[in-house]
Length: 77
Length: 411
Image (cartoon, rainbow over all chains, first blue to last red):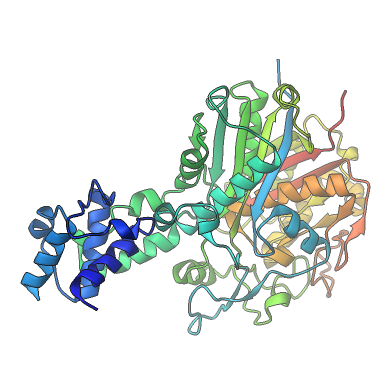
């Protein structure tokens, strides 16, 4: 599974009511996918589980879109 | 002026079914909802059985995201509330949403959420603990989720009195309506403590049966009883003032006519052996009812060695020789002990007993205990013309709570 698909899976896990078709690289986490600040913590845990890496709090603060997550994961892999 | 308080709806999620009606029919048939634990791997546990609400699917009641961030006990509460509201044919809209309140308690709260998050804390550190840990584990997440789901905007409250929680929640809701504070209350209890920590904790307290035969383990008032079987679920009633029920043309299922509560002031887990304070709770509940008119007692009847004796003593203290003539039964012999939901389900059962004229049995009562020598309706349901039923609930901490339900009649 490629990185995008794994991120999509993590988003669906923490936000199971989300419309999967909305999960695109340009999608805004908060506005488009309704992942608020509470959901971001859940998402961080799911991403760490999915990719076996540790995310820093300051890295998480800069995430606005799904594409930002892809870039972050790629940079750490 | 005091309001009369009537029951116009109820719903339940139990080890016997996903509706109050299905649960009732199985109780009458003496069916057990206890089985081997499937919610977690109980291999290493001395207790391996429980009354689980199998087949419960939260997605039948909540959207997927809300379901994920709602603990199982609160999911049960939402499901039972929606069923109760439907049965009561209650429309909630701008004309009445502030006239309706919710009081749904939980003895334990979100134990599975708490356990999971302790694990996250210990393995991943504080920055990965879910921000939902507090809103998911607090007992009042149950009434809060019901409020959010239904649009009810009166008070939403939770009370905690361990295994008396369901009865106390209904009792306090009854008083709120009786004294004119509110027109209608959604009231009951919910618990989902069949988790490794919950089962281990109650087991270590010596409260749980070690019997390995699931359907035989819960045996209230039997000489070979050795503890309760943990159950889970929720039960919720719609209570309202008689005037409000009439104004909206609701079907009246029963009337609540009394509630009494006392404390043992004795021990954090053991009941007062004499049953003295429990007897007082029954007397307080019956302050407006002639003791001679009580037709049925739904017992707390946990199947613990201590409870069943002290409860029997309490009943004898109140009713004297008449105690031997009153049919008494414990549905915990079939659903196990649903903790904070137990008293609420038992209130529903009292309504059904009154309306259907059938008394559900106490199952597994095979070896008489000389200290438990009343009529516990052993092993088979019985017909009975029941007008007034009382339900006892007692809990860790010395809670004694009693609710009195009556057949409704104009007077």
